[in-house]
Image 1 (cartoon, helix red, strand yellow):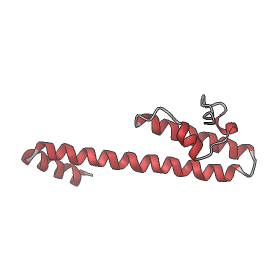
Image 2 (spheres, rainbow, N blue to C red):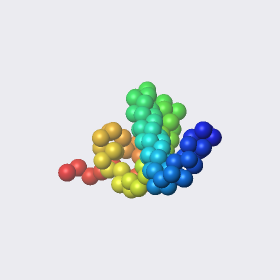
Image 3 (tube, one colour):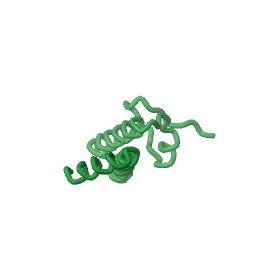
Image 4 (cartoon, rainbow, N blue to C red):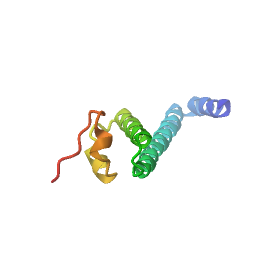
Length: 104
């Protein structure tokens, strides 16, 4: 990590805005990886949910809650589209403070 930090320091001395741009790019990439991993966890937990066990339901709720938190940290406050797209069932949403989107 110090190699990256040293490189950023050198870039900032030459062109300060370039150092900020590089750091912003790294942050955006990390956010994209994080949200992608959270969504993948939701998809996996929903597939396991079909087993019908209490543990599977708990895992699905935890995965969805974590995914919603990640989305909200990135500024996405509305979850209706992903609830619909990922087909998150009402029994998973119960207790999260979320409700299934209304049919159009």
